[in-house]
Length: 150
Image (cartoon, rainbow, N blue to C red; front, side, top):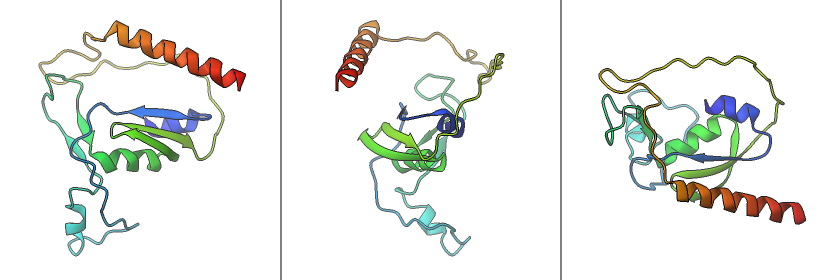
């Protein structure tokens, strides 16, 4: 999904991952190619980018399948061809595409329903704070007006 979004993003993308597992460990040994057996300990470092798979429920939500740790979220964004320009919070990354490839318009998109056995089909009932959304919309409009007058 990040690859497709990166291809379609013209200027800037805000990526929000609600579940980032673990702390903000930053020190790990990056190599373009790790050697099996001799360097496995490097991959076991808690700071190394990892996805954690959840077989059943996480926080009572059947749509949670896996979560990145702090460094995995950034690594996935970079792997998709995006440059990270900011990280205002451990769960938020601001990124820009390395290259904008233009857009493709598809008239008919079909998304299958899916879910975990014995749970609601996605998307189940959604809950949100209406006041929070109104505040975010108002801030977005204010920022857009400020950008236009600059």
